[in-house]
Length: 253
Image (tube, rainbow, N blue to C red; front, top):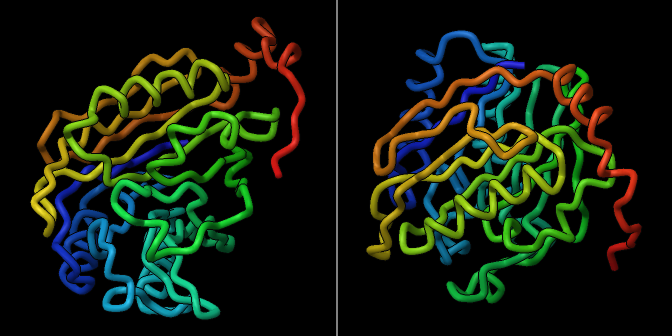
């Protein structure tokens, strides 16, 4: 499976500008099976959902469907969505075969996200081209129990607007998640300054199941990361080093 991860700047609260920007990038990616966009890729990490949120079947979801069909790719990233009188930070996954979504569970209280958005309550695994993929958003990265591999995924994706001030935590936790879960991990973060004056350095990366980078981005620079991931290599490693067989069982409430 070939991955294209888009570390990018974002136009503050301007959906049309961001969709045009990403549309141009996707036109020039070349061959890819999966394209990963950042968290809230149409607006930036905004705590004004009453101004930016779309209906559940809104224009960005239609744009994702168009991109998936036109380029025969799976494409994913999160968007502010309004549904049933609530706002959600919704991670859409759209492919030519179908679509799914994950609503961010851990809301970043230091920015007041929990005051503006509702938490999703369902952990989500999707499957594409035989690869099982766990969808996660930004702050979820700090909670390893929630994204623990229960032998139910092969690839863990985090989309983010993770500030430069905490870049060491971002890189360290992504590496830890790959090692402890014996899984490929993709972390896609934005770059540039948002409308609140917060700077983002990106530090996007694609890691293998040993926590080693398969591809990483230059900090503070828009970059398209490309890498191939091998399910066969992952399965061989898990057979040789089956740490998952000694993992503790648990249930999430």
